[in-house]
Amino acid sequence: MIRGISEKRWLIAQQYQHSYQQQKSLRIHGYENNIILGRYIRAMRVSNLLSSFLTITDSTRILEVGSGPHGIGFFLNTGDRYGIDSLADFYHHKFSSLQVGSKVKTICGKGEQLPFRAETFNLIICDNVLDHTMNPELVIKEIQYVLKKNGILFLAVDIHCWLGYVISLIHEHLIGRWIIFKWFGSHPFYFRYKDILQLLNRYGFRIAYKDSKPLSNKSNKAQSVFRRLKIGLWKFLFHTSCSQIVCINLK
Ligand SMILES: C[S@@+](CC[C@H](N)C(=O)[O-])C[C@H]1O[C@@H](n2cnc3c(N)ncnc32)[C@H](O)[C@@H]1O
View 1 (spheres, rainbow, N blue to C red):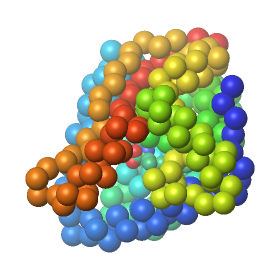
View 2: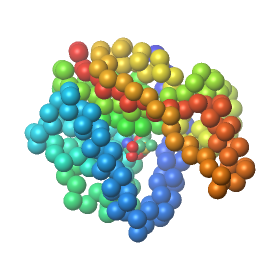
View 3: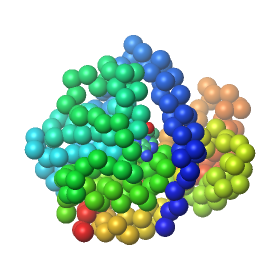
């Protein structure tokens, strides 16, 4: 069982997320079309992957948990789409140019307490969110509850090697009592692959597809020696990859 964190720690993670997104909104100003294109391509890739498991039509009920400023759901062509994010109101205001015209109904709320009835959705998307939440175990439990039987969960999550996992535990449970380092700021959890598989298993999900690819921590010669060393150290310690999992709710 994955133990949740305190609300105080989660609010710190949210502050990190808030300031990261605030800076991003300034950085992308004038380049919104590039972002829209990138996100559209990603949404189409995910949609292609999912097409082997379900057909998305206008009546397919889709929920994105942690929909962020420009989650996958905003760029799908069809579906009765909902997004929930604890910072949804802020995103609605700051990233209106990316969300305008989108038919996603966004709600400000938490994945640990989804305001929907049992078996409401055919598809739930949770993309790079689980390790930012207060209680990932509860989020998966809630997802299972609002997902229809045989409904599909698309989960993308960062995966770390055992060393990264142990360092993050030491940080969260010892050092983090006094100081939260920036590297860990918005990520209260560092998962190993087996943690995620066991978690899904506990709530009756059958894994139908999984892949894993290294995160692109690009290092090139144009970067300073210090930056390249920092990226090298990060890779050595944490060995991060992004895992995409499609699973079926069997309960
Ligand atoms: C790294 S962002 C990813 C956003 C989006 N899925 C994407 O890929 O662009 C993580 C998001 O999860 C949201 N989040 C964190 N904890 C949450 C919770 N307990 N319930 C709902 N959303 C949460 C954050 O506000 C943030 O928008």
